[in-house]
Length: 219
Length: 219
DNA sequence: AAATATATTTAGACTTATCTAAAAGTTAAT
DNA sequence: ATTAACTTTTAGATAAGTCTAAATATATTT
Image 1: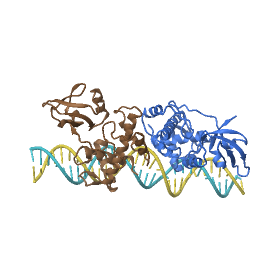
Image 2: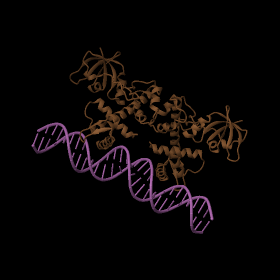
Image 3: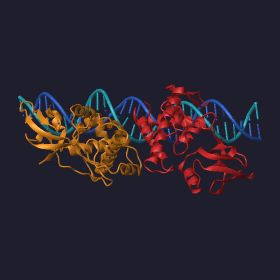
Image 4: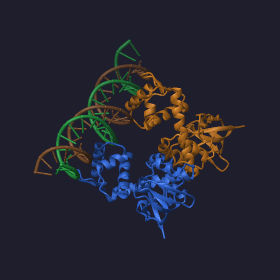
């Protein structure tokens, strides 16, 4: 059994490893987990001793197979609980994160599988992220960052890089939702802002926003 | 906000206060919470400093109004989650306690009320215990301990004093369930064992078992 | 009422997870 | 190739919650 803190580190490192494809260093983790670099070093040593990750002083970390397995279990729980909160308790997608952060640490050999079955085996969470199955298998949809899409190309909004509630509320306000069709109308070279069109309206989004949107290309 | 440990102490003290009507002393709490008397003393001091209970050295404790309010909130959460586990995830009544022990500590201003509404405002948990409402109000059914029922009297099984899984499994085995009609056929003076009859069968139960059964008298 | 048994509290230690401040290492820039 | 800037680690402290062992109260016998 692992502590909540340990589970949070593993989950965070896993996500960083897969979102940014760089080396995962101390400050990156400290930022994400909202703690100090010194605390990260301590925990990294502990997880390394447990062989959940490999660690070379000053050189960053990498999850072992075991560490990745545990991370995926926590992520599975998080995403299934998020689905539950949205589909059964009528929460909106920008309200569920903090509650799921707690629920993901409930310990039971059967609970999450029973919940999954009750929810009829959903494949994606409310933010479009794939839910790992019982064995840790996870569907990887091929998506492209909106920043890399050329003028005239079309796609659907598949998932988000950053699912913070501030960003989700922004999408609500701009009437952008998962699965929406998006077409790039124009790219402004001066500030890299992007003029896009959905089925219902047009709008201009900043480079920062575009970087958070993963698009499944339509051809 | 209170820690899990604090919430557990308050909940335990509340239940002890209402089940046994005696003074709540250190060892009683230590037993229930599976810890040492010295740890209980430490925590009691802390809760007393926070004015959640009154405490006179060597003389036991009593919850304040505030302490009771918090205890009832935790109990409310515990019982609603138990109901969820049994009714939605198909757990049986002897499997839900440990999971509910964890779920009861999830922090959110809205979660438990939304869950309650989703469950359509159940009034009792799977063990027959009443679920406090949003304001901490709790239905107190008038019941009598089976030990105090005379030969020939009839009643229905309302709730249990001890809902440990060992005891629940015993009831399963003996085919006794909540709401079952029970009639006392004979009381054996030698060991106080009780011969009872349900709608479907007869059996003999020990004094210890009888003490755990709360009966609603029928007349 | 003294002696014994039992219950409770205190003192001091330990673990987990965190922090600040200082030291050490790495990277980038001149 | 030094210096400066930044990152990471170490050292030492702190807080919560627990424990053991010893000390102190209270309760029960005789």
